[in-house]
Image (cartoon, rainbow, N blue to C red; front, side):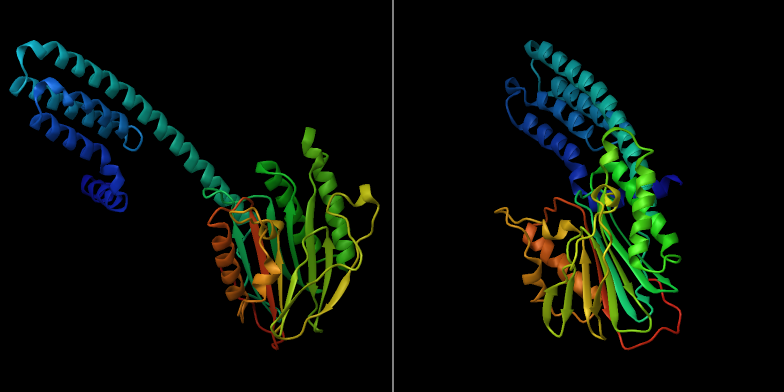
Length: 377
């Protein structure tokens, strides 16, 4: 990158982030006030604040340059309007500015190193996200599909929530789930479950056996972990949409009940019998139960993680999902998720305390026959 390109890039940054000019503006204001006020008030001593402020937002070279500018201004004020008896005060101010500039340069260097490390970590998180939550096709078989993922932290990109949809010989199979726990261990568990699903969804003849295989796979994975990580489990919901019927089969492994939106009405699809969370099947000794559900053209199914229903307003009340869903006018999965996103942000005033994942599925009259087109997540 040549010199002119760097200058243009920095100009663009200043245009987008005018607060970066604050240290320079502070220097100008202190200089004007020091010149216009009596010299015995020593307003020039506030020039020391400028390099200290610059360290929080400027690179090392620019921070040092501003410190030198502050030194030059103080010397100029001392020579032009200062009194002989005030020379020791100006010398002290010069020494303080020099010391603060050195400290500010060091702080700026440390900050830049941490920002570079954070950028690398974010890059790794983005790569992990692309592997774990790869873009879901907008069309699979006779289904229109879309997905939504919201991280609780503004700078986070991936967490323990996961989803996947695949077109298999048994029809379209879909999974959505939430790993108990936080941080990279939860991401690892989620990755193990999604990886097993991507393989087993093509092989297992029914959802009950698929859920059991996921349970066994996760149990093997967690035995390789240490300490409290042995307590990791995941709630999940498995759904199968056969190509030759207007029905969906669901296995709910301790997960929040999905919503069925049909002809303007909304209802929760609760399981007729409980199925254990993934990695707790052997402990609880329960079988995985399949619930069939009519799913005709125009019907929509909303699957979500508990971050949706556990979103709170300023009073601490939980988000009333069914009530809000009854007010939506959505004729497509993408529109449905847009309205969900809007209501969640408005209800929580932008303060999401947990990761949120949601998948919307709509049945159409079309039968599979053409290739599905990948969409954006």
